[in-house]
Image (cartoon, rainbow, N blue to C red; front, top):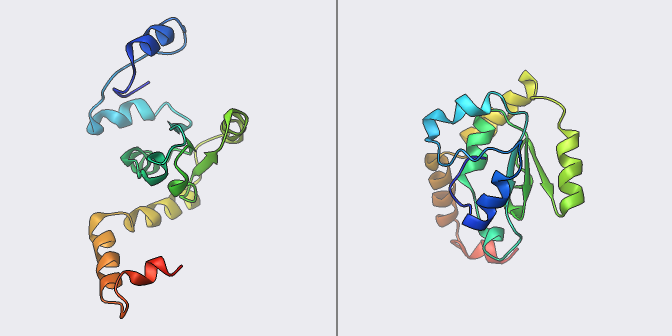
Amino acid sequence: MIGWAVSEPTRMRLNAVPNIRLVGIVPQKELHRYARKWWAGMIPFQATEVSAAVDPLKIYEYLHLGLPTVVTGIPGIADYPLVQFAGDRESFIAALTRIVDRPDEQRLSEVAEFLKSCVWEERFARLNSMLVEPAGLAFLYAR
């Protein structure tokens, strides 16, 4: 497991599991060295008001690496390519079992196109186009 958000009691429980290794923080430029051996990514969040508004950077890293990813608690990224959203433990396990291998070249091309729209320049351009709409950003609330 890579990351920093593990409490001490959780760390102790995980250390007792022989097939889990807590690596800690890994610099972004080093992540590919770990991920080349992975068949899936996981972004497990508890469903809360905060997680409903989260846009985790980790999903863009996983997509860039071509990793199918199972996500919980973050409905805003459920429709991203290679993402399977799970609402509970059973659907999480089922989603993982549906991932059989890395995506093919066609699917990776689709992901690359999607990622082009996720860079800040594109996001700012979309926001700017909304601002020049006759109603400004008010049209977002009319939906």
